[in-house]
Length: 304
Ligand code: SF4
Ligand code: SF4
Image (tube, rainbow, N blue to C red; front, side, top):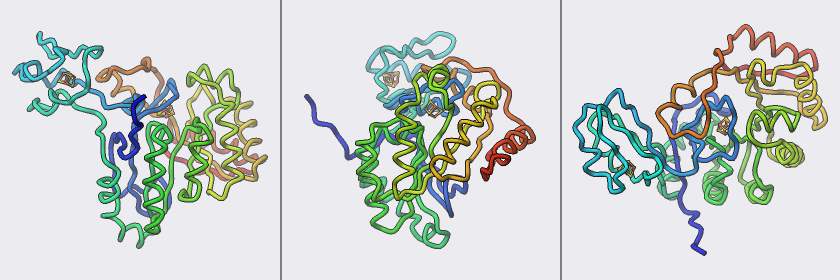
C-alpha cells in the first residue's frame, strides 16, 4: 500500500478579501473533492477529488499545439479541440500550451507550507478586521489530514479559522480539528433522509449525527440552507429544520437562494452531475421564505 501524502492539498481557487464567509476580511480557500452530488451544485468544478481539465472549445483557434504536447493522445483535433476524458491524466500540458485559454487545468496541488505562507501574507488584514481564513469546496473535510495541519498552523498564529461543510465526513476526521477551528458553516439541505438521497445522492443520517456532535462541541456552529424552490422549501422541511435548530439550542440560520451559475460550468467539464434546469431564486421570494423561519423564532441571514 502506498504512503498517504498529507503535506499537500488540491486547491481550486483562493479568493482574498471575501466578506461573506465569516467575520471580518477573509481569505477563502476552495478545496477539491466532495462526496455528495447535489442536483443544484454551484461548484461542479470542485466535485472531483483531483485536478481536471475544462475545455472552452469556442475559444479554440485550431493551432493544434495541445494535441502535439498531450502525452496520452487524449486530444482529438477536428473543427474544435476535444478531450477524451477517459484517457486524460490531467497533467495540464495542453492548458499550459494553449495561448487562447481554451483548455484550463482546474485544481492544483499545493504544498501546505507554501499555502500557509501565502495565506499569512494577509495576517495584518485579518488582525485589523477580526477576519481570518475559511476553507470551502467542494467539501474541505475530504482533505482532512492536510486541512487539519493548515488549521493548526493558522490558529497557532492567532488567525480565526472557519470551514464550510456539507456535513458528510467520518467524525474521526473532525475530532482532531476541533481545537484549531473557530467556526463551522454546516449545510442542512433536507431533513428527510430518503429525499436527501434523491437530491444529493446520499442519505443524511451521518450528516445529522455530525451536526449534533458539533452543536455539543466548543466550535461555533451556524446552519446554512441552500434554498432550492420545489426541492426543499416545503412546509414540512422548514418545520423539521427549525426543530433541529431548537433541539440544539441554535437560533439562527443562513439562507442561500438557488442561482444557476453552476450550470454554465458543467458543459466544459467531464462533470458527474446532470444538467439542472431551474430559474435563479428572486430576492423577494427568499425573503418570503425566510419569514417562515422567523415565525418559528429563528434569526435569518440571507445570501443571494
Ligand atoms: S491534461 Fe494532459 S493528458 Fe489531459 S488532455 Fe491535456 S495534455 Fe492530454
Ligand atoms: S455539497 Fe456542495 S460541492 Fe458537494 S455536490 Fe453538493 S453543492 Fe456541490
